[in-house]
Image (cartoon, rainbow, N blue to C red):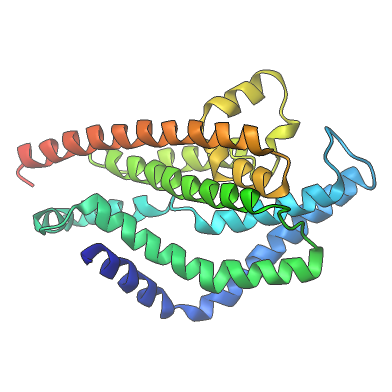
Length: 261
């Protein structure tokens, strides 16, 4: 119940910034407009790799909206607390600090979903058109892929934050990860259009779960068998990433204690 209360408190905290919602919605629509305009100019009425213009419009909309549900900003909260020394206070509380962070982020995601993603989806559907999943099974797989995207994005953000225990600034690492996500998540250029070694690298990394996989499943271009296999593979990535987090967390806490934090 403590963690649920943390999520609800985070949701309520975001309510104080409702004036920013319109800016976020406009930002989403602007991003979708730019991407759809580019794909219209490139593809016209033709198709490539079995993908037509309407597929790309749907893909652009979904990948843009999925980005609103990622938790990669978690490192900012931890970084600030490490630099201020308040991290020691949080560690003394009778709660698990990583879970507190996760549910804080979950509360923010809930707010984003209700006040940004839902209205953005409706407006995008009216303005640009969007495919609707053909089966309940497809919807369930899409929801599972969103859950994986949230877990993996939180893990990546939290790992960057933990590295701050060893460095004064994680700015360079943060921007490196963001660049990798931009390229290998397929959020802008779908991995369908990657070839050779680049596609192989993209398939090996976890970043594709932050854009390409949810959008591909929603649009029906990643079919049931492939989608199920990909989700299972994503669960393996979740286990690996959270195992690394546990190791980093244990090492970071020992470092904090040794230094008298």
